[in-house]
View 1 (cartoon, rainbow, N blue to C red):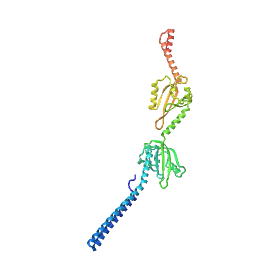
View 2 (spheres, rainbow, N blue to C red):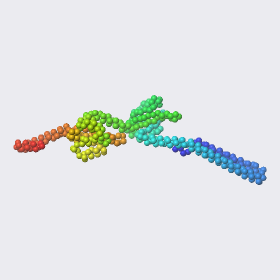
View 3 (tube, rainbow, N blue to C red):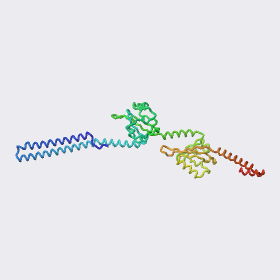
Length: 370
């Protein structure tokens, strides 16, 4: 903020005050000299009159000098007020601009085209790379960019300086103070206003979550076209997409399932406590895995091994749920067959250890198998 007169205003004010003081002293000296010089040849009465006139003249000149000084001060203050208003307005705009940049979600870096040294970074930039403002003022973009050599970075800058294009947008890696790497998207622009120093301005956005989401989408796209049954819902649990494999194990067409709730697959094999535990795990950990019995369109309950995962956005809010299924029907049939064989073997072993008549043996075997 500007709260003092400029150097020019101070000089003008000092000069005016000095001149007023000099004029006052001259007239005081002249009055004293006149009263002494001419008073020698005058009568006592005339001398008194002259002395009174001289004193009156001196007082008048003092008043004139004081008035002149006051007028000069008023003019200087008016000049200062008019000259500082634009400066005050500019300072206010600058502070508002800085506050806006500090509140921006993106990081802002400004650096010199010649030395490459930063001369301004906003709060987001400092938080992104972990350095203080004073530390950043001693650094260049090359100190936080690991993918570019000085020559490569200069080539990018020269394309903007030569006006080959108005701006550059590219993805790179920033190195945090703690050594970790951060994927970022950079919007770089060269600004060269008339009669002002040129500068580079970079708006930088952390794209860590975007990269992760893109990887998840690529994985989902790859698995969605696989033979593994997959179901996707929105954050409220409404089905938004299923693949052909999932349609095959449920008997429903994709059109019949989209817009529905997965409750349409609910069977009587699990109670409310089972589903309460399932949702509690999803909410707390974002994941649930286990055996579930889903009801086919024909009403038959079938066993599946399900894996359900919550998908979150950059703010941590759940946007989707992705569920994959493995049909356990064949495994269950094999398990039941093995259990039956084991029961038969156990029954035969029991029979061999007993002395039974044929009819008793047949009855015991039938009882063991039931």
